[in-house]
Every structure is written in structure tokens, then in C-alpha cells.
Amino acid sequence: MKTDQLPPARRVLLRCAAVLGAAATARLLTADTAATPGHGGSGAAAASGPAAGPQSRRPGKSPARASAYRLQPMAGHGPQRGAPAHPAVRRAPILRLPDRARAMVLTFDDGPDPRYTTDILRTLRHHDARAMFFVCGEMAQAHPDLLRAMAEDGHTIGNHTWSHPLLPRLSRDSIRRQMERTCDIVDAVVGQPPVWFRAPYGAWNRASFELGAELGMEPLAWTVDTLDWRTPGTGAIVRRVLDGAGPGVVVLSHDAGGDRSQSVHALRAYLPELLDAGYRLTVPSRHEV
Image 1 (tube, rainbow, N blue to C red):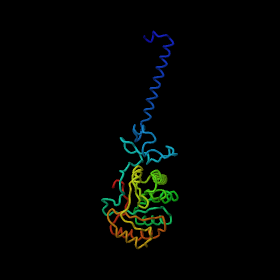
Image 2 (image 1 turned 45 degrees about the vertical axis):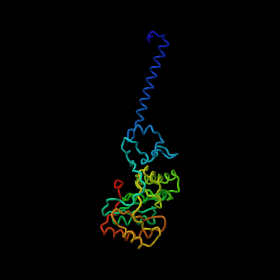
Image 3 (image 1 turned 90 degrees about the vertical axis):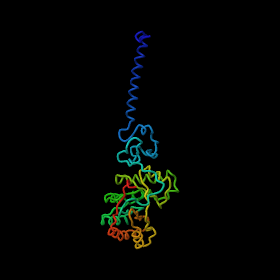
């Protein structure tokens, strides 16, 4: 039966149904367009929802406050603006940097502590040298001015967890919180999250490698341990650094966690000697490893 042969009431109902159907189709098309990300996302990312991998947020944290480094892109598009790409998940930390010629890396753990970090920064500034500071989040939160001074002087700030725990004794969620909170405070203070991570006590486990990679960080250990945490004397620290010097060597010292006055004095002694020997004290790029 043709439409014009239907009773008037039936014709009105059919017209209403057609109008409603068109409106529903328009709504579906609009929703589909809105679900397609405009910057660095993909249809897969939109469909995956808030529980998709590393870009999921911690309970109780609103999406608007999520840090950029955790908003990792899905396949098919480049990294989001300001967000580092995932490094590969390693099975062991980096101990030495390759192809560094006469370059070495000085690293300082556990700070910042104004009793020692300030003098270390002053010495590095005097010699125009760069270093890496693996900070603990609770110390960084207490001394944000020192974090800003590190960044302004061109030093690299790494993640050394929030409270310096022994990671293999923690649950995976606890490790994530230790690392994320430290990333958050560094990002909030200097405007850039860390891209290097160091496990307290050098105690690495699989979760630390996996979570570090999810947060865009490479695991860096060391080549030479000054053992300054034992307070062996300024001379002993200086000898360990000079005896272990070499291309790509990473030196471990501390600027907090105890009496670090020997570490401060040792730096004043061995840094000019390294420079006189032709070494450059620089910070690594993540692309080198």
C-alpha cells in the first residue's frame, strides 16, 4: 500500500518516525566525530576507555590533573606533545654509557638537601660542569628551590622514588606510587618529568623496569661507587673517582641521607683533576642508550 493511501493518522505517525530517525542518525554521527582525538590520539585510544594501560589514572585523581607524561599515545600516531615515548623495558640497568669518548657522568642520590646540595651546585657551576641528581620525592617537595636551581644550571633530574624504599619488598602498586609521586613533584616544579630512574640501594626488580618504562624513564645505575655513604674519608672518595675514571663512566655519590660533607669536599678535589685530564663532565641523552 502506498503512503498516500494510508489513513491520515498512520501517515502522521510515519512522518514522525522518519524525523526521529534522522535526528538519531545525526546524533550518532556527531558522537563518532567527537570520539576521534584531534592531537596524538587514535580511534583505538578513544575506545579503550580509562582502564587502558599506562594512561589510566590513579584512583581519586581527576582526568584534568593527570600529568602529561602518563598520557601515552596508542599505536598509529606519534607521542603526544610534551609526553616522552615509552623506552624499551630493560632486564638490567645501564651501568656505563657507550661511545662517550672523554666524557663522564657524575651522579648524586637521595637529595636535595640544602646542607650539601647547595655547595655541590656551587662547585659544578664554578667549573661549568653538568651532573645528574636522582632526587627523592619527599626531599624535592621540601626543597623545590634546589630543584629549580638544578634545572636552571642545566643539570638532569632523575627519579629516585618518593621515600627511598627497598623496591623488591613492595607491591607493584606501591612501586608505581613511589615513582609516580616523584615524577609529579619534579614535573610540577621544573615543568618536565624525569626521563631517568635509579632504584634505591641498586635493588632493581622486574616491576621497576616495567613501570619505569611506562612512565617514560630509562634505568641508570653506575660504573664507579664512591662508597661515600660509608664516610670513608675525603681522600678515599677522591681516589675511587680518579682510579675509576674512563669514557662513559657513571660515578655514584650522594648529596643527602647522612653526613655528606666528605662528598662535598671530594668533589672540589677530583672535579678539577678530571677536567685537567681532558674529561668532560656532561649529562646523557636518553637517545644515547
